[in-house]
Every structure is written in C-alpha cells, then in structure tokens.
Image (cartoon, rainbow, N blue to C red; front, side):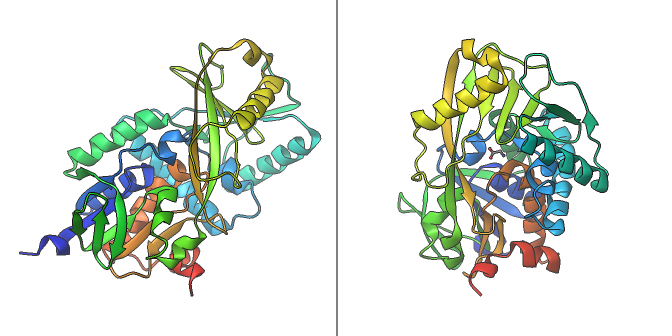
Length: 354
Ligand code: GLY
C-alpha cells in the first residue's frame, strides 16, 4: 500500500481554482485534501465574470494561445455548471459611452467574428446613457457565493476532504500550518490567490505576484433586463439580492480588504452617469478583494521549483473563468498525463526564474 504522502494531493485555498483543481484531481482518481483559512478570498469577492471575449480576446496584449485556453475554460464551465447546478447568467450587454469605447466595441465585434462568437448589435436600453450596444450570448457570469457552495458540495461528494487551517511555511512535499500541524503529500498545490505571496521566501516565482485591489457595491431592489452589462471597466450584475456594481481596480493599494470610500464614490458616480436611477438606490453592501496579478498578467500554473510543490494562482481578473481549464491542466500535469508544451511555456512559473 502507498503511504499517505505518496497518494495525497494537498491544495491550499478553497476558491474557484483550488476547488476546480480538486474536482479534476478527484475525477482523475487521486486523493485530495483542500486546506482553507476560512477567510473570504478573491473568488468570493469577485463578480464571477466568465468573459473570454471582453477580458482576453478583445485585448491585443493577450496571445492567441491564451485566448484559446480561456475559450476552452468558458466551454468547460457549461459542463461544470450543469453538473454542479450552477446558474450561468447571459447574455452580456456591452455598452460604449465614448468615441474611444465605440472603437473598442467595433474591434471587439471583428475579433468575435474571427473567433466564431456571436455578437448582436442591439438597442441601447432606455434608462442608459450610451452611444452603442452589442449583445454577446456567449459571455456569461455566475454568482460567486452560490457557486462556491456548489463546488464545495461537488468536491465533498466526490470524496474530497476539507481542512480548516492557515498555511505558513513550505518544504519539499511538506506544508506547515499556523497551529503547528505539518501535512505531507505527494503534491502540494498553492491555489490561494494573492495569499500564496506569503510563501515567496520558499518559492522565488511567487515574487512576481502582486495584489490589484477591487471593490464592489450592491444596491437593493434593482434588476436590469440584461443580467450582465459592461461599459469599460464598469459592470452591472443583476442578482437575486440586488444589483452588483463593479469594480474598482487599484494596483497601488496596500494588500488589505478594507473598503475605501473614495474609490467606491468614484465607482458609484460612474455607475450613476451610465444608469441615472442608481442615484436613488439604497447601497446595502460593499466589499473588497485582491486580484492576484503577475508581471505579464498571465497565471502561474505548474511546478513551483520546490520538489512536490505546484502553483495555481496569478489569475488576475479571471479566476472564475480560468478555474476549470487550470484544474484540468494541473491534474494532467500532476498525473504526468500532459506534455502540452504550449501551455507549459505560457503558464509555467519557471518563466519568472529561469
Ligand atoms: N473580472 C472582472 C474584475 O476583475 O473586476
């Protein structure tokens, strides 16, 4: 019989990436334990956007290989959502408020056509101050808090174990927790977003990880006809418990999740300019999260350089979108079933150290 170290995969972080990786590994027949600190992470704080067209394909900075990876993950989400009972909201309405945003949407429509993604020129909703509108049926969003619960249920139903604990140090095949416990495993995966930066003294590639603070607001009793509306970096998400307005983006902010008044006021002013009824809405919640960014804005997925330790973080604005494809790829890497040199080159942590 194999020892527990030989058969166990330990994942740090029960966010979308950790959970999707855990589910993929369990489905591949491995034994998995997830260690989570219990504090809400970036996945909980996020808008839950599954938007490969708007976030990646429309941005010329992203390579074709990465766009294809993101599109594959969006496709996997449809299977995942059906299995886990997660509701995917669509279509997404893209709005342009300025001449520059009109040009951006026009080029997004051209890119969509090349990728075979449907986009439909449409009327600007009556209550919105914009110049151009496009509807994109394949751009979706999910409700993160409900989706996390569904993924945890699926992980546990597949036989995964959840452990509450805060990881503080690392050695080959060995993870120590703040309460003094030490866990050993065949492979340890650091999937706890910007929290993984706390391990940078053990894993040099993690020195590239930086926080990009994002803040959101929820207002009561507002639902829009289009469940997801985007204009520039502003978005409105109609949820059962109100309208979520996102999101600020501050790479200079300290790595704390306090809500700061000035960025929230600027976000609400921008929201009110696009959708004037926001002025009369009641703010019922605001919160913040830290997007885990890297210097090339691409994830860190693969061997960390420390024996038996892998990384699955650095997902920046797209943790939810990329989680299923990262989970599948990571499971194949750990089981030695992939030699995908394209993904290895694109995502390997070693690109920052070699
Ligand atoms: N994916 C949207 C955001 O990070 O705000």
